[in-house]
Amino acid sequence: MANVVNEAREFLATHWQPDMDLAKWKELVIDNRWSALRWPEDCMGRSLDDETALEVEALFLAAGAPGTGQDKSNLWAGSIVGFGTPELKQQFIRPLLMDEVAMCLLYSEPGAGSDLAGIRTTAVRDGDEWVINGQKVWTSGAKGADIGMLIARTDWDQPKHRGISFFYFPMKQPGVEVRPLRQATGDSRFNEVFITDARVPHANLLGDLNKGWWVLQSALAYERAAMGVSRRGPRGPGGATSAAHGSIPSPDLSLVKVAQQAGKSHDHVIRQKLARLYCMRLVNDWNGDRAKAVSEAGGSSPLASFGKLAMSGILHYAGHLHSELLGAEGALDGDANPSARDANYSHLNAYFTSIGGGTDQIQRNIIGEMILGLPKEPQLDREMPFREVPATARK
Ligand SMILES: Cc1cc2nc3c(=O)[nH]c(=O)nc-3n(C[C@H](O)[C@H](O)[C@H](O)COP(=O)(O)OP(=O)(O)OC[C@H]3O[C@@H](n4cnc5c(N)ncnc54)[C@H](O)[C@@H]3O)c2cc1C
Image (tube, rainbow, N blue to C red):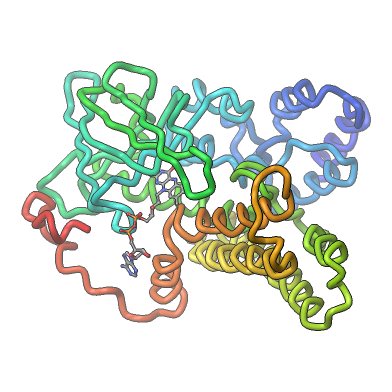
């Protein structure tokens, strides 16, 4: 494996210049299979073990060259790598790595959020296609999406977790109506999606028929791991940055600056709170590394739930602290008061992480059952054919 590290060093020396066009660089990194090192060769990776991959990633990091690590962060392509047919891999992996396909997650429904196995969107086979009917909700990025990762019920006579299938569903077709919802932050990033007699080819099934629940668990673990390390900036849920492996992440100093500007950086209590926030972030970054190491070694990763739960607490804590630093000024808002606007936004946007991808309470259930070994929650409808589950018990 020393060869591949040398090859990476040579690649960086030959091609990377800090002032180069980053779009061109991204393409070079992807086409030379440096972007997803742990994935197999037919998925634009190099099948590297974690230790070697980390060595190569460290070289890129030291050179200041972006583009590696998509095997840890690219949920969309990751699901195809794990469960797609060779044709789907061929069709989608490169465009997904290049960020050329707009994607969304069609999981939650008005009657199925925390209890996703209660979904009622239906897929019925018609020749080489499936016909989809139902309603999804809270779908981030559905407006403009090309493909939705859709869970739908394909067998109503099986118990709730076993009759679900997972599809790569084309969004731009008749029968798909997207209606934006407005959030407390003022953003409009998620939507309701109404699906009426829309179609998806059978070839777009991920994993086995009626076994979509297991594909979903893998996709949710990816999402939770990413949310566990994402440091949301003051505006918008984009801008997630992963902690650098093997190095101590630099502290988020933005609130230190706010404290200085507010003349509170010598206040002992404030200093303790800033240090506490930094320590919480640092420990959570280490936990994120631990969760990734477990999942990359082939284990299941309930540890990702720890990270997501901790990040939810960190974001709420940071929002409160920001407001506390501003004092009465925090009651202002709008572009003329950027610091107060950012504090308010951080406060409200913290709920993104404490609800999206599974609520804090659900992460606690997962931690209780899968890490602490506590008894499972009673679920009376678990083994019944879904058809017989009363609608009121489906939540
Ligand atoms: C910003 C954001 C983006 C999102 N993006 C998407 C997306 O792109 N695609 C998508 O499909 N969904 C998305 N969601 C939906 C999200 O996954 C659901 O909102 C979430 O799973 C909770 O489901 P629910 O809203 O139906 O709440 P419910 O499941 O009705 O829960 C209501 C309350 O009851 C609690 N609760 C429920 N069951 C239990 C239990 N067993 N034990 C303890 N407490 C429980 C919950 O914690 C919560 O406090 C998004 C949500 C947000 C906030």
